[in-house]
Length: 136
Image (cartoon, rainbow, N blue to C red; front, side, top):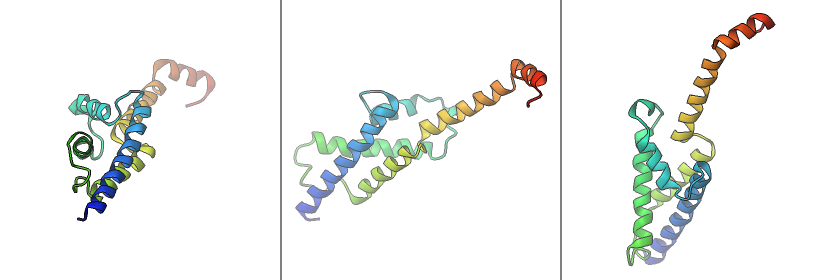
């Protein structure tokens, strides 16, 4: 790969990564975006990880963060082929997926909220209320 292409890909990757990182910061309300997202995924008990592609997502986010860290911290990596076009496409795909609320932590939260709603709906108080109002 020519040097200009490598520089272009590396900068494009960093820009895409920064967008995903900023989205994660807003989503989680923290100063550490992707790093905190990974941390929370790792801290989630195994029995709660019943979300499609959980392991793949965490593995890919860790890999993308390593590429970012090499570009930012290692000397001379901007001129080398550090980030590939596949890396750029992967970050873009995750940005889209997260924006559409199809990321693992959001999916897990939505599943929990749905379960809580069902449990609440089936509570004694809701059944008594339904009895007197004629609603189910």
